Every structure is written in structure tokens, then in C-alpha cells.
Image 1 (cartoon, rainbow, N blue to C red):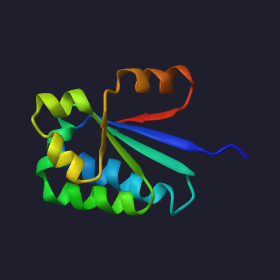
Image 2 (cartoon, helix red, strand yellow; image 1 turned 120 degrees about the vertical axis):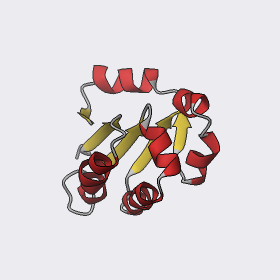
Image 3 (tube, rainbow, N blue to C red; image 1 turned 135 degrees about the horizontal axis):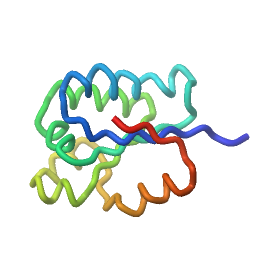
Length: 113
């Protein structure tokens, strides 16, 4: 059986959109069996929101507990001086240009918010 995986590219740093769409959906995708796997890719100013907003951090933790993987753009984290904050939250940092290109070129499911 092929596993169904969803990749969520999270670039919208609006706290309400983050809470009421990205994280609400992400924390439910595996428990409700909508997807077998899910990865949220944090990119751009969203990384700073995650590093600084306690409510968003709580919601990220809930999604992680449900089985969702979180990855953040290392270049963004370096430029925003928030690398340590993201790592403390259990978020993997990596340069995302090639991985995102691979996702797109391989025809994987990608939701962009």
C-alpha cells in the first residue's frame, strides 16, 4: 500500500490564518486518517512567528504529538536569527530549495498557505 503524504508549505505569517487553517488542519490529518503522513514546511516570516508566539508554539506541539513532522528553512532561520528557538521546538532545520523542488517535480501532494 502506498502511503498518502501531504506536504504543507506554510508561508503566511498571519497568526489567525496559522491557527485557524494551517495548524487546525495539520493536527487533525493523521488522527482522522485523512493522510498517513504530513510534513509542515515553515518558510519565510512564518519562522519568526513560530519562534516568538507562544500560542502558535502550543499548536505546533499539538500537531507534532499527532504525528506531523515540522521542518523549517535553515536560511530563513539564520537570516532571522531564530535557529536555536526553532530547534528547541523540535523543528528540523534544512536548506529547503532542493527538497521543495523535489516535492514539486515528484508530483507529491503540496498545500501552500
